[in-house]
Length: 267
Ligand SMILES: C[S@@+](CC[C@H](N)C(=O)[O-])C[C@H]1O[C@@H](n2cnc3c(N)ncnc32)[C@H](O)[C@@H]1O
Image (cartoon, rainbow, N blue to C red; front, side, top):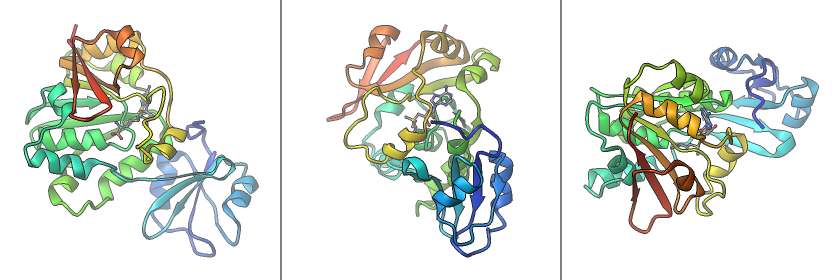
């Protein structure tokens, strides 16, 4: 349902009967959006009035994106990043980090940024000497994640700093990979949407509604394996049909987890 790439299809506004905050300009540039005055309008009325698809409402607390016709309401949150960071710091490991063979100083290209939870964990591990670039093809998600990574306070300085270091790129991963130099990242990572959602993951519901649902194809994998120096890692639910198609060389799974990480060698 992504319509966020069409100029003017998103309007930026403030809370009811309040002026639009000054930071609206940052969003206008990122989204090619228009600032409109909220007045007493409901969001549905506002969107209809301006022939828009969705409205980004800026309040002192957060930026929330609404698509009133489909009931979608989405704001940035780093989801499981804190819990995974805590597990790592207790030495409990993380199957994504294991699959990537990740270490300080690595360069990681996350081709499916989403909320950036996986990118945050990668950024924590690669540290100040490393680099994490995250690609997101849905414009509104790229902008909300870029803003969230820069401003969200997890209450833990080390995680906040790891978030601030992630570079967000609004692009289609295939186009980005086709232009990238061979072996220019140690690890290239994909977390495409699963064919069936994992029940427990309610945080994924509004993201899923807005996300690009294109499957990961062998052609994109070929591009990724050229750009990766150490490996390409793909996240899927266990026994994913994608494994038949892509044939990973090794699978990694956490204890009691329904998620697997497939590892592929570079070409
Ligand atoms: C399952 S989510 C990723 C979640 C992410 N790993 C995290 O930790 O938050 C998949 C994301 O990849 C994006 N995406 C899908 N296909 C893409 C493509 N071809 N290029 C760039 N981003 C893409 C979707 O819009 C969605 O936001």
